[in-house]
Each structure stands twice: as structure tokens, then as C-alpha cells.
Image (cartoon, rainbow, N blue to C red):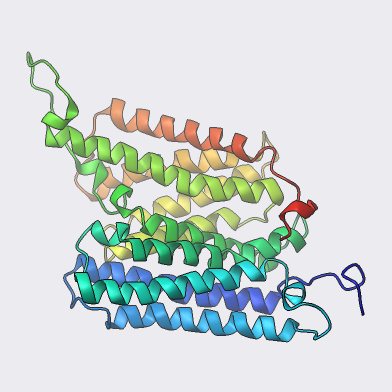
Length: 349
């Protein structure tokens, strides 16, 4: 009987990764359509066209994952030992997603349809989030263990797209902290002369500004963490930052029916800046993430000033928030400085 050493476990092939990304995009588009439907008072039930897109994408993903497992079966080793590296986690994640889907149907039938932020905090929806994140990470996990340090853009694009989908999925469940949907820069607060400043909860305008600041910082974390992980493992090809920022910002701006289409250009500008720094050969590679974030929010406020009639924040607020977000993006790079290398066997389960 062949030993594990003589027959090491395989990794997902390039076509299998592409299929995973395609089906992941299918599911994420369905999710964003569902979010759009909630925001625009479309018919509410479990059996809707947008749920159909989401769950048909899941069915396709599950079928593809089963096919991968069946193709890998040798018949001479335990079933788990034949699976591609990390594919066991993918199968478990899809099972978790299926449990969440059934639970969501029961929840809707017994307790009704969630309204507003309730939909983002529903336990069954969070179960879908957990399963979706783990399943969508399959192409990234496979690339982490097999791709060369300096891949071509063509070979690396599926990995970047998978990271963009993961970021979009996580960001969707944090929409209550998203400057793309809460009109952060349009929230005005004017302190009355001679009035002692009290706790922010006493003024709705200041609360909205604090929400905007928190939204920008949270979105900074969402963008910076996956990009730092990329830089920890690879020397990414030109176009990586543009593709990543472009996909995520298009999805979030599209969620609001492109009511602020200029914000797409903020994402593209951030991507261009990050690519320029990453491939300029000056300074640490992680500086490209901080630069991208700085350009993202400066452009966000600039385009808001031009397209939306003016930024309601004072210069201290918008400039200080941009500086703070840039510092945060740079500091997050420290978290990836000592990650295990791709050759570490401890992470190959």
C-alpha cells in the first residue's frame, strides 16, 4: 500500500480554483442582490429571486466541491488522506452553509423576515457568513501553499478575486459600519458657541459623525488585512491592488444602485497608488497598503466635495480621520510580520 510520503496530498488545480472563484462570485452577487432588495422594500420572503441566485450559487459550489473530492479518491488510502490540502475544510464549510440555509428558512417561517440591521445579526445569517468565508477561502489557501513568490498577473488573478470576494462578504455583514452606505461625509455637527460640550449621545449630528469615523476605520481594516497577507506571502504583480480595490468598491457602490458612482474612482485611485508604491522599489512593500488607504480616503472626501455638494466635516475631522486610517493601515502590517511560512507543516491540515 502506498505511503503518505510516496503519495503526498494534492492541491487544487488551476481550473478548480477558477471554478471556486466563479461560483463564489455567483453567491456574493446573490447576497448583494438580497441586500439591495432589503434596502428597496422588495417582496420579503425566503423564496425570492435574489435568494434563488444566492442558493443556486451555493448548490453549484457544493457540487463542484464534491466532484473534486470524488476525483481525488484513490481507493487505497483513507478518504480524508486523498482530499486536496485544505479541501476538507471547504467541505465542512459548505456543510455549515447548508445548515445555515435550512435554519434561515425555519427562522423566516417562525419569526418572520428581519428588518434593517437585524438581517446582519441574525444567528442563521451569521452561520451562512461563517460557512461562506471558509468556503470562499479555498483558492487563497491553495495558492498560499503552491504559487511561486512572484506570480504573473494571469495566474494570480483568481487569488486576488477570491480575496476581494472574501473582503466583500465580510464587509457586507458590517454594512452598519460602511461609509459607502451611511453618507458619512454628509453628517454635519455644529457646536453652539458658549454651550458646554456634553457627551456625543446628546447630539444626533455628532453621533452620525462618530459613526462615519468608525465606518472609515473599520473599512480600512477590511482593506488592509488581506493586502498585508498578500504582501507577506507574495511579490504581487502590477494590477493586484487595482483589481482588489476595484472589485470591492464596485460591489459596495453598486449596492446603493450606483447613486454615488464617483466613489468607484476612489477605489481605483487607491489601487493605482498601491501598485505604484509596491513596484516602485522604494521603502517597505507594506507602505503600499498605507499609501492606498491614504489615497482612498482623500479621494473619497474630495469626490464627495465635488459630486455631493460639499463635505460636512471640518478639516480637522476629515484630515485627522484620514491620517488615523493611514496609521492604522500601516500598523496592521506588524500583525503579519511573523506568520508561519508556506513550508510550515503545522498549517497543512
